[in-house]
Length: 314
Image 1 (spheres, rainbow, N blue to C red):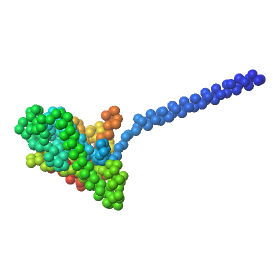
Image 2 (cartoon, rainbow, N blue to C red; image 1 turned 60 degrees about the vertical axis):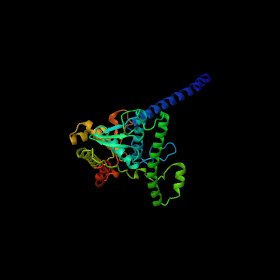
Image 3 (cartoon, rainbow, N blue to C red; image 1 turned 180 degrees about the horizontal axis):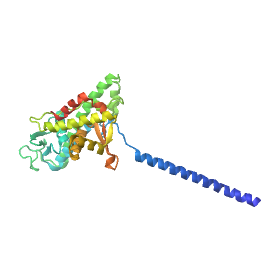
Image 4 (cartoon, helix red, strand yellow; image 1 turned 90 degrees about the vertical axis):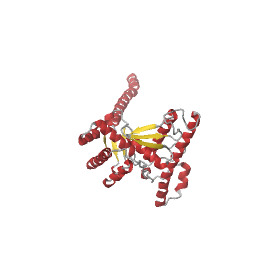
């Protein structure tokens, strides 16, 4: 009998351990299945009216998306000149939104570039380039070494960044006066941040300069306007703010009787120009899971015409 009790006591912990391990295994499998299921059905919804923008580097304030995209384009143009030392040509067919953003940049600082309108776009001439022979890479205003050029270009980028910051800071100061928090300005300048109640996307749009002769056809401008109007109405009727990319492209293609490549190009143009109102979420590897998000609250029907007139100089 004592031998049996001894054996039972030795076996009991093993039995309990086996049951516990079985239960833990079942629990782990159940939890992993739930997590896996959640990951498959999860949609990364991002708010367009987010409080903070991007480009908060180098001791600068954060920028709203529509200003950050201008800074990105300016940076690309400057780096292109640094590498090639020649003028840049943008066509309406391939650089629709880039042309409009260049015209916005010239509103901020007319001395940034000299531009010439051509039949299908614009030619951008850098101020460091000799006026007499635009295509000669060796004919540059200053015979400087590459590092000297880079230093000058970095100063130009920094100067533009400061102008963009000033635009946001003026709006932020007005907001602080409305909410009676003027004391926050000193604190914010110390840490390069804005009041939590201040929406960066409320800063004014930058009106582009007008060309002597319009390079955008009325049909092309109207096509983009019609797409924006249709999308806003379509989203409103369904009470949604985002849809799958392939779905909306197909719907637009059928409605406007256009090939999908034309619709995709127009959508890209609108997203580049209205970054605080439209965006595409591409977090998923599968393109069919891409999402097109539209901020319906910032696009009231009566203001749509004004919004696109502002951007298209039309």
